[in-house]
Image (cartoon, rainbow, N blue to C red; front, side):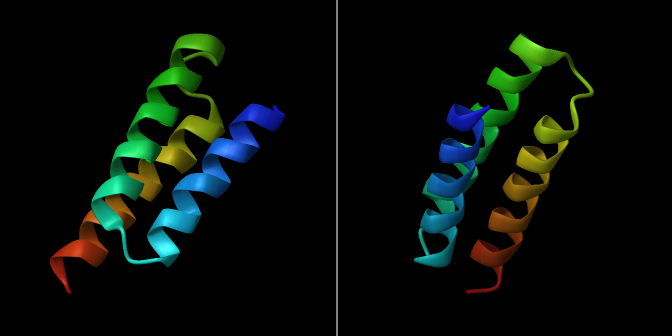
Length: 62
């Protein structure tokens, strides 16, 4: 669980620093890894994929 939290924080930090493409890639990989380990509908995977969408939206508006 700490690994997931650390990776989510890393992606969030990239997003905060305006590195939206990096953030989207980090969130996407994390979501896939969570699904592979904990199942397709794990809420943390859904959170990660929401991060992907948010990063893409922010990148499109800059």
